[in-house]
Image (cartoon, rainbow, N blue to C red; front, top):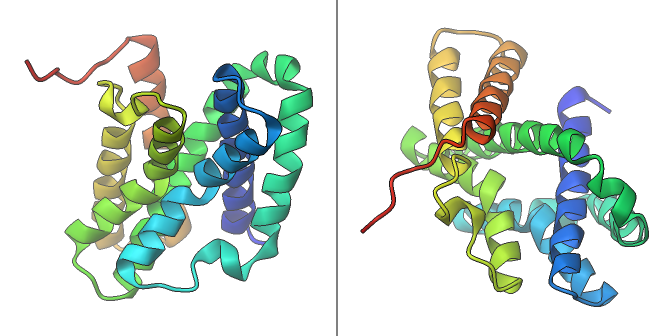
Length: 200
């Protein structure tokens, strides 16, 4: 198991837990929580693959994603009080996850010969749109539409990654720099309460 694949699985697991915790706040039953966990974990990648014509989509070709989601649902449902105490750790995994998913979406799109601007958008879709579907199904205004520096951090990271790759940096080095960049933006955005301007 290589590093990228391992982090991809960890990100999927953490996003699934995030989905269950959101569903719990809305008082969903365990089936509803499982649905929310699933769309949170793989929704972004599924939408990306459908848009760029890469089918069957990723999770259909690797059962490990479904297994991890299947573990995450009962684990987070029955131990949610303990998991909620690990918010800082979850936040860090989430930041790493969106950084990696941004790069994975970007690289997959570029591999099909699509324009870099499209790749930046697809990288952002990979990282964020599982959360959008989660929030819509939970009848909550999606996080990325509430002025939070989240999707914009992914887009900035994607652009940085493209620039680093143009300087012929190794894939792994460019990836690590980009993930750290996105984590730093997310930490500063949360701690300093950075917000995007509202439309009035």
